[in-house]
Image 1 (cartoon, rainbow, N blue to C red):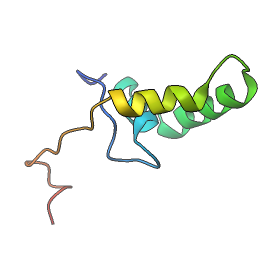
Image 2: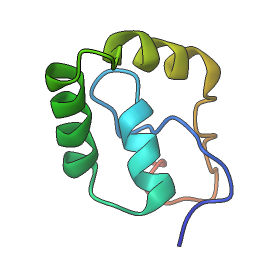
Image 3: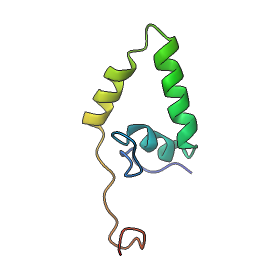
Length: 73
């Protein structure tokens, strides 16, 4: 089941954009990252880095849930 809104994930490698897409569509983050890298490398018309930076700026970060036991120590 997809989330209500697209957010950058806190489970991130760089900006959390691809992990956010993976959470939104309920698919494995490794698969999303692999597809992104392949599209960026093998498609001359796909400006991968520019698109990533735009999504990094435009997409809000996922809010912290104070009731989630994973975020508290």
